[in-house]
Length: 327
Image (cartoon, rainbow, N blue to C red; front, top):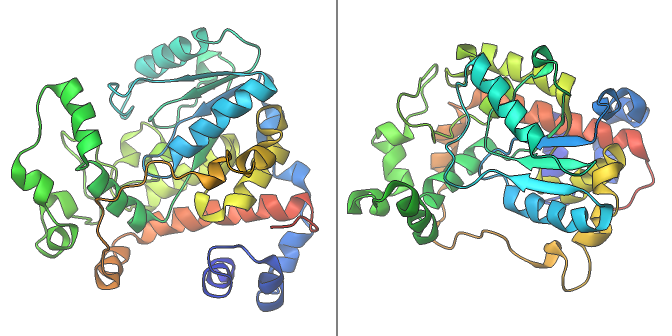
């Protein structure tokens, strides 16, 4: 936990490793780590990446970066259409069908596929297990972002093209703080809460790592988080975060070089690099008070447990690479 306190309170948005080593001496244990023990990319024998992207974690930026890298590093990029619903609760048969369909899209030796879908273990289907990657974000900030994103004009137009209808006025004028304080069904975050008909219920960041089992649905429960952690350790090469941009890009470049070689240079390329562009900014999102965020955090304890687990894993991977890297 000391890792995150130091990073946020001492160094702001820039991860200052000197501060961390001085104020968090237990990090010296991480300093001695060897990257070969933290990189499961070597267990995958084909150059296939599944990016089962978590909504509202900056995935459009990573997708654009991979498109640019594909031209430099010679790999194929494919993604699911906007109209395809998020992949949750797929049966075993459906998972096999989807995995087969995705792999049949591959035309080049190296291949990236992107879709909003829960993790799939495709080993039982005797198919090549892909390299999984993903991005995460502070759970409460992500939920707030999703709440206002689905009310933006551009998302509403996209949804209209899929469903043929717009939401009512109440939907578009709903305020997040009022939604939380009045216990509106859309803003309930109760322990064990199940979702019914809304496949786009994105309260659970961990769902994308847990999988399609019924154990993954109840909100903020230890069993779902334990399953998600297990899958992360076994099959996800890198789980990054734009909250730690340089750490994420460094780890991607070193742990999956076939795809991400040159990513830092490309990202920070003067004038044209993605670092100098703002992707998917929602100017319709008002500021939410810290009081409301604190109320929410009390109900996201397990989601934060998973979030910090992934962040610590990312930092361990980073420290194992080279203690002389610059930010």
